[in-house]
View 1 (cartoon, rainbow, N blue to C red):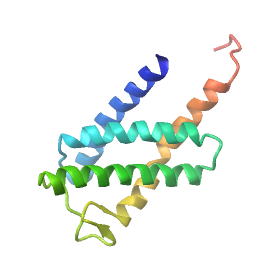
View 2: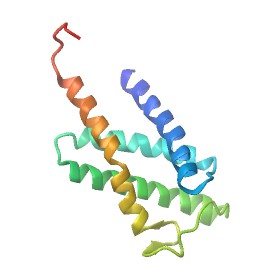
View 3: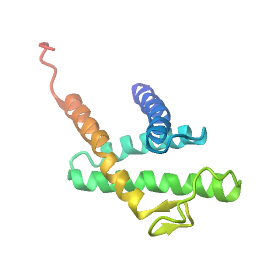
View 4: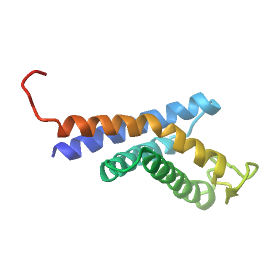
Length: 134
């Protein structure tokens, strides 16, 4: 139950944080981005749990890839299949179907850094023995 509660908190953080980040970056967002942000945050938490002992570089790459694939999934569904025109990266270098592109994929790797560091710190705190001094 505690893990479900933690995942719900992470989902909520992403559901609020991703649209906020998008508003800061481009001045607007779309309601579907809350769902994408929540899913992305849960994926980041899972990646960082599973790769906790891996290098930071590996965790950043995996996290950036997870966010990029989430964007691809949402783009294919909401932009291409449903025609909602939430975004179009066709004019950006190395885009795929106008839904993802290399510059943003690399940016997601970099933007994953605070999350990777947060999850690493949380994992260390869970593993630390209780001393009664906290």
